[in-house]
Amino acid sequence: MALYSEVMQQMTDATIAQRPSREEISLLPPFVGLTLDCVHLLKTPAQFEAARGAIQRAGFVGFDTESKPTFAKGELASGPHVVQFALREQAFIVRVDGEAACAFIKSVVECEAVVKVGFGLKSDRTVLLSKLGARNRAMVDLADALRRKGIRQTLGAKAAVAMVLGQRLQKSRSVTTSNWARQTLLPKQLLYAANDAYAALAVFYALDLHLAPVLAVETFEPAEAVTSVESVPPPD
Image 1 (cartoon, rainbow, N blue to C red):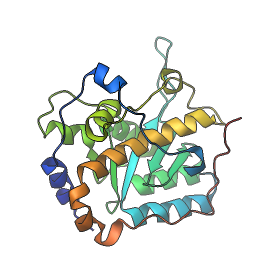
Image 2 (cartoon, rainbow, N blue to C red):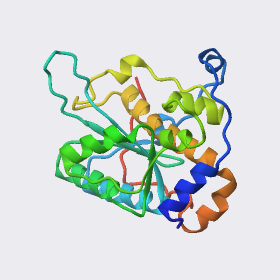
Image 3 (cartoon, rainbow, N blue to C red):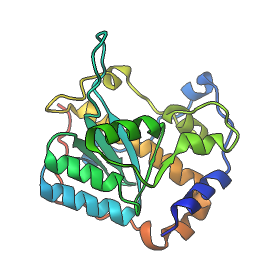
């Protein structure tokens, strides 16, 4: 497996295109993300263990969190309420609720053998440390990597997907600001969360395509199907 420092150097050495304008982004084809049948909502200890194994075998995972927004003045944020991990062919969604779920999240976040890839990870690190005591290790913030390539603006997922993949990542504001603390997540929330993390992983792989054979020696084998993980039902 490649060292974390080597991955960071590969990110720095990658060649990327110039940032497209908002108008240019609107003309791009839609981002090809995961479908609901590839999204798994984890609930039981057996499901957490199966997902942990798949993530460890992959070695690299897209990562993000979601929190219920605060609107009232003086209202304290209580997130994150959802943590998502994405592999190349599937994603795992975890509600931050219960001992088993929190232990699973912490084990993945603190695992140095698994590189977590995402955008704007500083806020995620802060809330996970505050809520779970999880100290984030082996993380690649793609916004930082792109800045090292001379992109002065801080890029989010939408701009990076357009610039690196030539695709348009659609992010619904109504879903972004929805209640992520609800007991039963809606199918549109599950799909949104999964593809937030998956988009980061897709950008990561696109930047490193020419080095994939080197990195794949031990960790880039396709994740096995997690048959014990509950699949998300399709929307009504």
